[in-house]
Image (tube, rainbow, N blue to C red; front, side, top):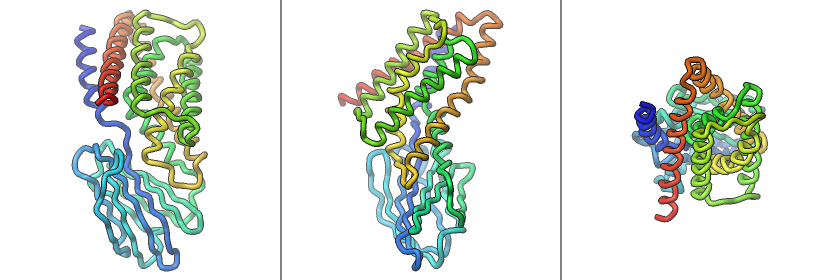
Length: 317
């Protein structure tokens, strides 16, 4: 039964994993604050469910658009806006946005102020405020979204909980993972450390396979596996950097944006602890913890090997 359930979950996760964290990004640059002209770049993921989303600006703005062209993971469209007044106080809307795609909006004004917001299927309209935005808090939500949409990262957190005892040790282990990926994310984003993205993804998959063997052996660390979490977190940080590098940080608060992104990832990880912890508590209370660990090792091992093979094939082909 454990093998059957693990296989079904394996197939389900394969379908989910096809939709990676890949938000859209609208970048608007104010080119003339007197005549209210703007240049915009609309980056929309090529791998997307449904048709491409459509931007809707205020009626006071006249749009001139160029034909979109592919660039990496995105379809890029250049837009010129000639408005009758400032876009501050106006509303930007996006239609046909996928349920799995958020749209980050960055607006850089001539007075060096920046506004950032996010649109999604539930909140498809965004009002541009008149006042200056103090902190790039949008990246906090992006960090949470990236963690929760990264099945490999979620499985790694899930597997770690089988190796730790005690809530405090769990928090320490997850935090060690966060500190490690924060280091490599920053180094990679500023081009101080670089590895091919495809290689990083294969190595991340191998960490899942290794974790599966630890879980299957019912290994328990007397204190906390923070050292392992820290070491593997260095690899996962390079994966986070790749995702963030694709959409870019188009403001003058790069360090704060990276900080909020990392805090968002940490918040997403900590939010998973009660969910996964309750599963393990329930398994222990009703005496099927051993079966649960076997099932978890099957899931981790199956997904890890699947990702290793598929990502390695992607390198050689």
